Length: 448
Image 1 (cartoon, rainbow, N blue to C red):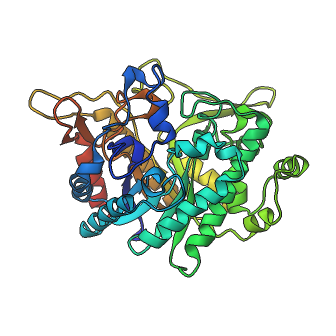
Image 2: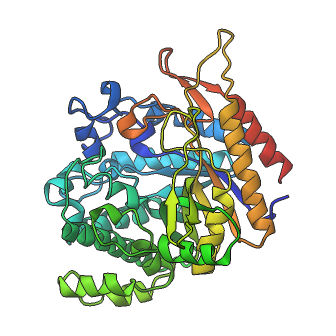
Image 3: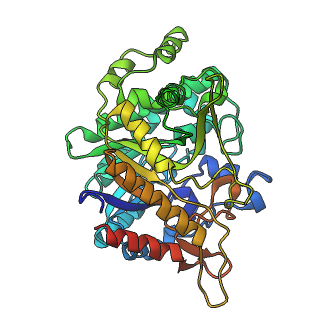
């Protein structure tokens, strides 16, 4: 049995599920623009309709309730809430208030992700994340959220996976906006994201100490080849390396050390000083940060070992059999044992698994069912490894499956299906519960 305070949840994100790109005063995001350039998204897919959460949110939230989770994580579209001149779009406010009210009606706890990759295109045109002016725009957005939604939600995540949206989007690796930043621009962007987080955290908690404000990290986890203490020491040293080039922006220390140790790694701070990126008060803001939980999106791991010369190696080990729809997503259940252990040893804070899931090429049977044994195997094996970590003293307090339903998987289009609920794209977006839906439901029920 898991601890009584443990939370089970599911997640969605605005661009991947909402659709309705021109309704309710919504403005274009970078993904609205990027997806309409031929060749950017497989099969020419876009989020114009997605799974129509904008019109069917009541149905989807009711399905989450039926699943048995207690927490519903979703993201706001910045472009629905803020007009280009910075003023509030009350139609967008009304939509999200309706969503939150429905979550409460279903007796679920809402967790809002403030930024899940869909930057307003007008802000990208002004320079995007590398420009310090992004802080004012983000804080204005957050102030609108606080004024209009705080009475319905007190749990926020400022950013989802900067390791992805900066690295993939600004090294032209298939994500919006498809630009290439220099190393200096990447450092500026990462610092600006962190400053946005700390300022937003301070703003949201001001006058509301009950509010929680977190930051979602992602990574390839670690699985040691053996229990050699020297290998574990090498993992600790290499996993938290500091960036030396643009390809290293999928690293952890540049984001996680400021969040949970309240300072940058020395090499990073030195770079920020030498290149005049730091502004007065920035480091004080980091020292005053209030992050008390580490949020981790974990899907797969690298295998780590020392060779005969004692040199450290970390590599993916794909099997000969096709694992699933996405080549990078190899089923490695021990990801949820070793990686939380590694993170807790460094930061000594509670952990929430904010995303974990599998993409499978699901098919609908003639009698209207979806049998997905691989996803069920993935889900249950990872949950059992998470239980093992908890039994060994790792303080994990929640698990969110990604995702509630199939959706637009960014540049991969609608091919990869992560959902516990099948979306019948050919038949009015009909929702069909997969076998894994019932397996997760059973696991939750057995661990209440």
